[in-house]
Amino acid sequence: MKFAKDEIIFLLGAGASVDAGIPASYKMVEELEKKLVNDKEKDWKKFKSLYYLVKSGVEFSYGVQGKDPIFNIEVLVNILNELEKKELHPLYPFIGSWGIRFTEVVENNFEIISEFRNKIVEQLKKWVIPKDLTSSIYFKCFEKFKKEEIQFPIRIFTLNYDKLIEENLKDLLSIERGFDPETREWNYKLFSPIEEEPDLYLYKLHGSIDWEREKHTQIVKETDNIPNEPELIFGVQSKVQYVDPYLFLFSEFRHYSLQAKLIVAIGYSFSDEHINGIISQALLNNKEAKLYVVTYSTDNKQKIEQDIYRKLECKNCNKNQIIINKKQAKDFFEKDLRMEKFEKLFKEKNNNDIL
Image (cartoon, rainbow, N blue to C red):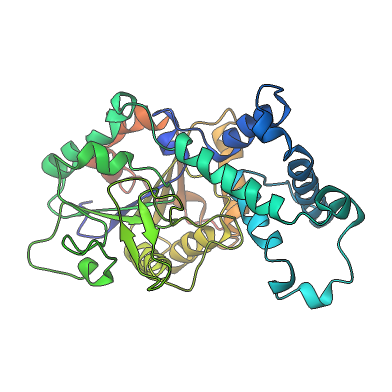
């Protein structure tokens, strides 16, 4: 089988950048906890009680639902975002009083919530900017893939805030991110079909460390430096924002997922319900479509596959639609980013039994 244009797309999660030295979301939480209990990190210690209050609340909430808790840096920041709204939150009129422990921790100092959130964002900027690009050169494999293997643009949808793709490929491939080269302002029309297309379309679904939203115009611009308040979205449940660029980017992901015969997911944990819903819809829409998952997990392939089907809630998907490749992202890019390997996935006889 030969792939035509837009029949293969890529989805990158945090695991795609781990080999480059950028910690995954759950690792960021682990590092944060070390700071909170370290006597030498005095500027972090005042947030310790607030942190554990939020964490225990999340674990309790998932426990009540009978689900395994999801707690990472994005969940933490999203909850802090909601808490700092206080009386501006739409649920505020329906809440009789704050929890006793919350009142004890915060008292009348609601500013501590914003302080903690801002402190985390400052640290996040350090986490996602590697000291050098040497460890991330495996992203350059996209150049060979484009120039030697395909005749159409690569479409990459990424959930990561870092700029590893841009920095490694900027001198090798033409990249479209959706920003006017003169004004530096977001312009969705740049993703429209043109006669001479770029080598790579890059859709940053959760924002980017070099994006900034102007307060007065609310227009998002790309910057040369890292802004004080990068335009990022956090959380598992509140990822979809009904403003651009996010509304457009998620729409594009849905559009091209439905067209794709193969979705290559690299380092994605399947913890985002919005992303999972789109993938599930794509697999149900086309029972011949496949999801190729690159993951470095200690579980066996059967366990990984069952876990993914469960998270996708794809009860009517076929057994053959998910293929697991247990590798680190770096190994995958260097050894398996080959059209020949992707084409072989469709040469084997399909097993259309429904799970």
